[in-house]
Every structure is written in structure tokens, then in C-alpha cells.
Amino acid sequence: MIIPIFSLLFLFLTTGEAQLVPGFYASTCPKAESTVREVLHKAMINETRSAASVMRLQFHDCFVNGCDGSLLLDDTPTMLGEKLALSNINSLRSFEVIDEIKTAVENICPGVVSCADVVVMAARDAVALSGGPDWEVRLGRKDSLTASQEDSDAIMPSPRANASALIDLFAKFNLSTEDLVALSGSHSIGKGRCFSITFRLYNQSGTGKPDPAIDPRYRMELDKLCPVGGDENVTGNLDATPILFDNQYFKDLVAGKGFLNSDETLYTFEETRKWVVKYSEDQGAFFDAFVKGMLKMGDLQSGRPGEVRTNCRVVNGPKTPMELVSDPWLAF
Ligand code: HEM
Ligand SMILES: *[C@@H]1O[C@H](CO)[C@@H](O)[C@H](O)[C@H]1NC(C)=O
Ligand SMILES: *[C@@H]1O[C@H](CO)[C@@H](O)[C@H](O)[C@H]1NC(C)=O
Ligand SMILES: *[C@@H]1O[C@H](CO)[C@@H](O)[C@H](O)[C@H]1NC(C)=O
Ligand SMILES: *[C@@H]1O[C@H](CO)[C@@H](O)[C@H](O)[C@H]1NC(C)=O
Ligand SMILES: *[C@@H]1O[C@H](CO)[C@@H](O)[C@H](O)[C@H]1NC(C)=O
Image 1 (tube, helix red, strand yellow):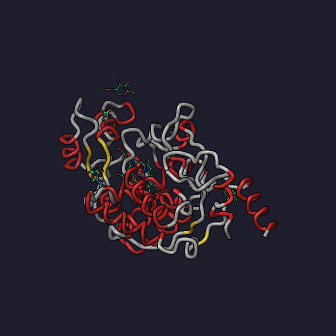
Image 2 (cartoon, helix red, strand yellow):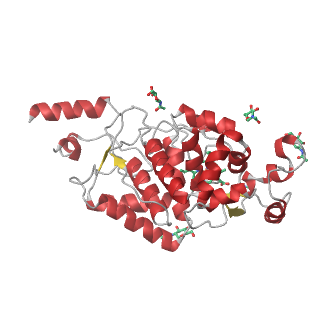
Image 3 (spheres, protein in one colour):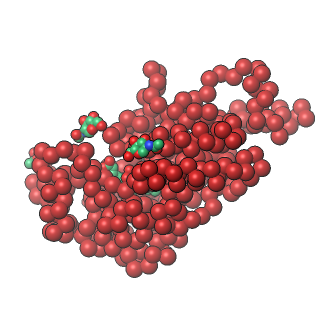
């Protein structure tokens, strides 16, 4: 047993590139996946929007140094985390739902299920429980030991982004134009703030005029919701059916009723339009492409060393020799 323990320890300390597999917890924590879904379901009964908010966390976690739970770390005196980065501050929410899920899985299998995997499972469940597709996720991620506000600021796209900038950004992560359009379909659920759209209502690209791509009647509604000088924290629906995961989002884009500039631009740009039209007409094709995109995005990894955090908000403290001996990672 000495050799396997030694090599496991060696692996644990030197590589972060985990082999992701479906059913990773089947033997170490057989109830992990059902527990995640149960707790998320309860959270959705308390607040329907938490599905959207939790699902969004996968995107904001995975794009910044891989799906490693870095997004979940609170700031410390020596580390500016990602929660207060430009795209996240006053915007990302439902971290307490992730905490509830993590507590529930810690209660049944302490120290086994990573926070990064919790995010990926919960994002999948959020879609499935909102009427969208259900799929098997690959698991076995480790949680990062650090987070970077700077990296998040440099990477995460602005709601002002146009389709060509989004195509380039997604390509950096080996995500195709089709993946970009399908994954943007996540905006089939949830809400956005006036803060994210006032520029396009009143001063698109510095023209002093609204974005001409917005349907005039829809623009009147948005103007009422988000008047000049109004409360920019007021929220509006990202599509006409904001609690149902369906292809309404794409129908809205075709009708000029996309909420965000980054949404409507997918229809106004030639290269992305064909996918928008396709998904607006074929929900099954959207669901298939969405699942493919979520799996690809879920595979992004930094290759840095990691751990299974006990509390998703903080890295584990240094281990005592006793804790090391009883570490479940060394127990097989
Ligand atoms: C393509 C580039 C994307 C841009 C520019 C973008 C931008 C945004 C913005 C600006 C908001 C509203 C935030 C606010 O006003 O507070 C939002 C909400 C949301 N985003 Fe994205 N997003 C993108 C892609 C994605 C992807 C890939 C996913 C997930 C797979 C996602 C999931 C969501 C969800 C579910 C919400 C609603 C969250 C809630 O209601 O709390 N987004 N996004
Ligand atoms: C219920 O939802 C509210 C937001 O509407 C949230 O602040 C609160 O933390 C949630 N409570 C539980 C127990 O999840
Ligand atoms: C898209 O946005 C990028 C970055 O803001 C800008 O440089 C580019 O000119 C825009 N492209 C088009 C076609 O509007
Ligand atoms: C994208 O794919 C290339 C070639 O397969 C690979 O070298 C690169 O690491 C990938 N990039 C990301 C971000 O996964
Ligand atoms: C519109 O945006 C431009 C460029 O960002 C800025 O110079 C101008 O002052 C803005 N106009 C208004 C009315 O806010
Ligand atoms: C939105 O609310 C937050 C507090 O939740 C506040 O700090 C912020 O200044 C508000 N932002 C805007 C644009 O009104």
C-alpha cells in the first residue's frame, strides 16, 4: 500500500489536471448527485430565479482559469477574489444556494465532493428543473487554491460586446460559433439589470441614440423599466418566458426583443444569425447544442494544483499530520 499512497499523494500535490468522468462519485458518494438536485429544487421553490443565478455561475467560474470553484472564494486580506470583478459585482447571486448544497453533501460524505463539481452539477440541474434538457456531467474537478479578480476583469465579456468580439473570445476556449450561440441560450432563464442595458436604450455606441435593432414597442417597455437616471439595479426578464428553459430567447432575438446588446447582436451579425434562426425554429436542436456546449465549457481546466474545499468560500487550512493520514483521497 505504500506505493499507491505515495503516488496518489504525489499526484495530489503536483497536478491539477484531473481526469473528468461521468459518475465520478458513484462509489465515494453515491448520493452526491441526487442530493445536489434535491437542495437546488428546494432553493427554486423558495426563489425560482435561483436556478438562473446558479446556472450562470458555471460560465463565470469556467472561463476564469477553468472550472475550479475559484469564483466562490471570498476576498481575503491578501487576495482580491472574483466576486467583486466587473462582471460579477452587484450581479452574481445565489452563492448561498451553493453553500447549502455543499453543506448537504459534506453532511453525507465529508471532504469528497469538490465545490467546482457542485457548480457543474447544480448548473445542469437548474436547466433540467426549468424544463430544459437533462444530461450526464463529467466530474472529478479539484477546487483552486486561489482566485483572480484581475483575470476575471480581463476575460469576462461586457453586455456591450458585439458578436464578432464574442466569437473571438469563445474561440480562445475552443468553443465554436455554434457553441457561443447555443450557450447564450442560457439567457432563456433569469434577469438582467437596467445597468446592463441603459447604454443601448439611450446612447448605443456613443451615438446619443438607441440601438436600432430593438423592436420599437419592446424599446418603449424597456424605457419605462429603465428611465434615464433611474435605479440601475431594477431588473428585467432576459426573455419572455424567464422561468422556463426553452427556445423563446431565440424567437425574441428574431423579433428584435433581445434584452442585452450581446444577445441581439447574435441576430444582427451574419455569422451567428443562422444559428439563432435555427434554434428559434427547432428547440430540440437548441437543447442538443446547449448540452454539447455546457460539457465543453465544463471541461476547461487550469492544470493548477487543487483540493476539495470544505467550505466553498475559503481554501482549506494547513492539514495536521492526523488529518493527512485520514484524508479520504488517500484512503483508496
Ligand atoms: C456570451 C456572452 C455572455 C454575456 C456578454 C453575458 C452577459 C450577461 C449579463 C450582462 C447578464 C445580466 C447581469 C446583470 O445585469 O446583473 C447575464 C445574465 C445571465 N447570464 Fe449571461 N452572458 C453571456 C453568456 C452566458 C453563458 C455562457 C451563460 C451560462 C451558460 C450565461 C448565463 C446567464 C444567466 C442564467 C443569467 C441570468 C442570471 C440571473 O437571473 O441571476 N450567460 N449575462
Ligand atoms: C430564499 O430566497 C431569498 C431571495 O428571494 C433569499 O434571500 C434567501 O436566502 C432564500 N432562503 C433560502 C433558505 O434559501
Ligand atoms: C465589435 O467590438 C469590437 C471590440 O469592442 C470592435 O473593435 C469592433 O469594431 C466591433 N465590430 C463591429 C463589426 O462592430
Ligand atoms: C484548445 O485546443 C488546443 C488544440 O487541441 C489545445 O492546445 C488548447 O489547450 C485548447 N485550449 C483550451 C483553452 O482548452
Ligand atoms: C454618449 O456616449 C458618448 C461616448 O461614450 C459620450 O461622449 C456622450 O456624452 C454620451 N451621451 C450621453 C447623452 O450620455
Ligand atoms: C446597486 O445596489 C448595490 C447594493 O446591492 C449598490 O452598492 C450599488 O451602488 C447599486 N448600483 C446602482 C448602479 O445603483
